[in-house]
Image (cartoon, rainbow over all chains, first blue to last red; front, top):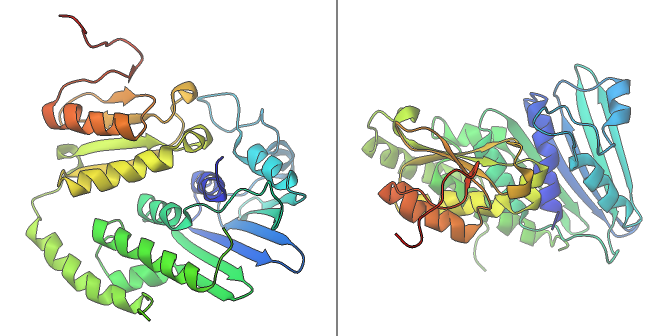
Length: 182
Length: 132
């Protein structure tokens, strides 16, 4: 993966496949501990302990179209190669939480990339799922909740081109305000 | 200093969009629309499917072509990512492989606008004749 926003797009698809109704994406930049944390939480179907042990293996997948599943292994490998950690917690029927800690200042940490585009792509591809994105930096924090967005929109679809463009600019401008790391 | 956008600005935009939607209400049944599904699993994303999908959405909108662009999972053609499945109204779906921006543009110009098949269909059972 070229950047972290692609990992996020990829890992969120797992939550979508687990029929989640609410997906929480959180990024915490902590220069004090030199950690760049990405945490994705869903209220999907969850996994039992047996499955949970297997998901970090590249040779485990729930798909039938191919025999490998690299989303989680790649994410884990990338986090660990920057001196970070990776963990998954899950309970059947309750949901799953994936946490990856990257070394904030580590040279091998991929850049975040175009997160606004990634988020808008997710919002508009899955209008039936609610997303909360929050980003914390030492200068402040920003949060966007699609439930609030949809409330403001009434029956206008979130994937209308004009709305997409607006949301992309909204996220970009607000993230610039809190001076997110590249 | 310019004002930062907020959700409050969305209300105003909503009203504008609502009036636009009413103008083009013409029984938008999905089967009458061009449908494109972009394969967006790990393999697709790593190969640049995000860029392809954003390009398709924006270019089709820019050219005023009514199409539904959605995400789908891995179609099993990981070697040929990014792959897209294009369904023209009333036709069988066609899968294209190695769809970067240039290929996507070619597909819009030829397949979507002129209904001419383009090289790159999976499985490879179609090839343009170079020297007729």
